[in-house]
Amino acid sequence: LAKIADGESQDDSAKKYAEQIKTDSFDSMMLKVKLSRENKKYKDGVAAVDSYLEKSNSSADEKFKALRQKLSLMEALGKNEKYYGFASRFYDEYKESKYEFDEEKYKLGLHLSETGKTKEAESVWASIGQGSMWKKLADDSQSEKKWSNQYKKYIERIPAMAESKEDKK
Image (cartoon, rainbow, N blue to C red; front, side, top):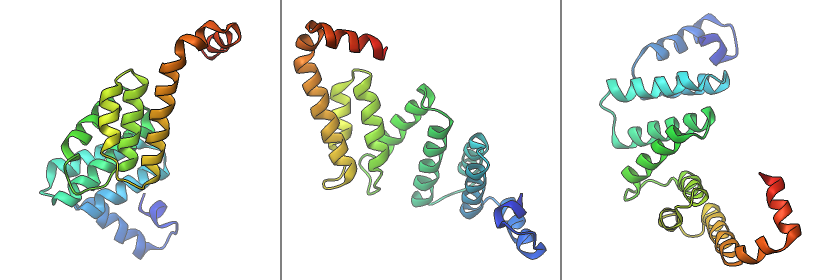
């Protein structure tokens, strides 16, 4: 495992990585996460983050970074209710903090919007920092949703549009 991380078979560097992996430090956890991503074993990465958070007295910055890594790993496992539940709890915990996580806010808002929770989506998207790419995407998504809702009754009345909606299902 350590040799994979190093990309070489040199014993000294392999020993160094093996020692890092055995500890419960933040760097060790991040290395485990990196290895789990490279090997597409995302559950192992989530387990490493959970183990780190359980065993260590991490700083607020480290805890935020670890939870953000967990969110990313859970997304790689699949966007399901467990992922969106965790994303929602993550957002609730850090929405008033100094930390920036605009990408995660955008994705959570998009999910809320797609599930019909428009007010919650707007609230999440409103917290995205001004001038960021994610804010522009959120604004575009909101205006598209508003346009769709506004012209929905007309689109459904046009036979060609009704057929294209059925094709998408």
